[in-house]
Image 1 (spheres, rainbow, N blue to C red):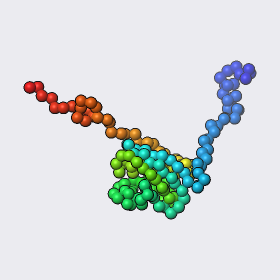
Image 2: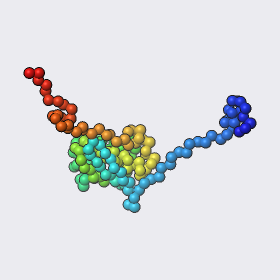
Image 3: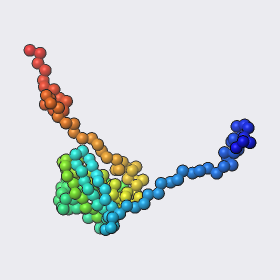
Length: 161
């Protein structure tokens, strides 16, 4: 390095040196002894524990079939979104337990858990799921009610007289 006297010498030295490419992160699949991937999904006040394993596409939530637990078609569509984005419909069975919140929050929590578990089972699916925003937790929670207020921020009606 002591023979570099000018910027041109520096440029030629940098061009001659092999560029150290940043090492790509290689993720390994994370599975248990039974061949399942586990993840926790959250949305609003709902928390879902989700296990994903290869199968026929059966989804069981709290011991019930998806159609029985989430009767609304919109909620069923929300649960199927990670599979359609990752292009693996009907290839994985899902077993989930979910507590807290309402049905909408629970559906979002199960969707978050399915997405996280899919990318743990098959790391190649991470790019599609991340681009769709399914690996990000939606942290919006209802604000707590404050003392002396009828709701979180609402005040009682003001009366001058």
